[in-house]
Structures are given as structure tokens and as C-alpha cells.
Length: 113
Length: 113
Image (cartoon, rainbow over the protein chains, first blue to last red):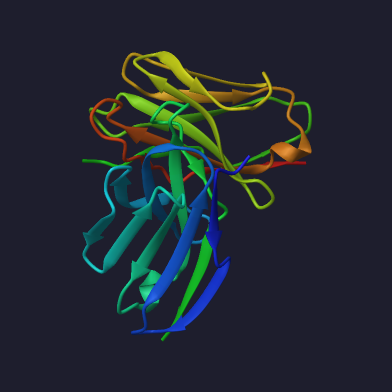
């Protein structure tokens, strides 16, 4: 079963705009990670936020984590056409090993040039 | 460092056959995880190996098995293939100890006819 659920399922924006994706999960976690996948290919790790952190930045990415609401958001600023991809949040529930990731169904982002 | 490699990239099999997929992790990584990705179920964790031992296992039938060799390379095997096994099989490697980020290979696209 899916631990995480991303919202929205699909998002279409113009190049230069910001894109915000949300993720909700069900159980207590150790860490939450975001990954990107270009059409039918392997996943690329974007950022990891630990359960005791509230916000993290990496380049044009900003991730927030609210463990009380069991939710996270990924913000991509000044989007580019190359950001077009599916984005997944992944959690490692405390009851499982930290290398056993549970993925949401993903948000499909389209950035229009 | 070279990335995670998976072979073969594409595979077509018939129902009832068996298949073996191979994964070579990033040099120095001792943890290898396998995931199945389908349009209906999304990304699902199969199992994780660390230093030749299965450390975590997902909720898949016994037809799915794996192993890891002393050089950290891993194989997964699916016996008695079913149509529903058609999927993208992704392998990911990680240090297995001090970092939870996973590095994914390009995947093996398995089609069962």
C-alpha cells in the first residue's frame, strides 16, 4: 500500500513560474525524500529531510516537513522546461528499515516553454 | 564514479517462464534495493540486500527472490511469470550505513506476454 500521496496528481505551469507539490503520509517516519523521474526512466534523488527538520533548501528546491500534519511540500522556483518530470515523495516508516522506501503515486509536472 | 547499471534494459518473456535481472551498484555501496513500478500500483518495494544478506522484504509472493554477491552486485529472479509482472524493475544502491539517499539505475522494462 502507498504510504505517501502526492497532490496534485498533475500540474502544468509556464516556464519561470514556481511549482508546489504536496505529499501526505500515514505513519511516523525517519526521513522523507523527494525524487524526480523523467518519463519511464530511473529516479533521481533530489533532497532528503530528516524528521527533526522543518525546512531544507537545495538550489531552486525548497522542502518543508510538518510531522504533526504528516505532510511535506516541494517548491521548485523559477521552473524550466527541463524540470518537466514526475516527482515522488518517499518515506521510510519507523517500523521498517531505513532503506525500505515507500513511494507516493507522484505528481506529473509539465513546464511549458 | 560510475552510476548504477542494470541489465538487460528490455526483456520480453512468456507467461510461465522465469527471468533474472542484474544490478551493479555504485562502487563502495553495500546496500541494493529493488522496486517494481507499474501504472496501477506505482513504485513498490521488493527487497533490500546489505552485505549479501536480505535486510528488508516487501509484500510480494515467493516467486520474487533475490540475492547479493560479495562484490555487492545483485540479481533478482521472478519465477513462473504472470502477465501482471510486466513492469519497470528499478534497482537502487546506497551506502547502507550512514546515508539514506538511494541512487537508482535506469531500470529493466519487463514485458510478459
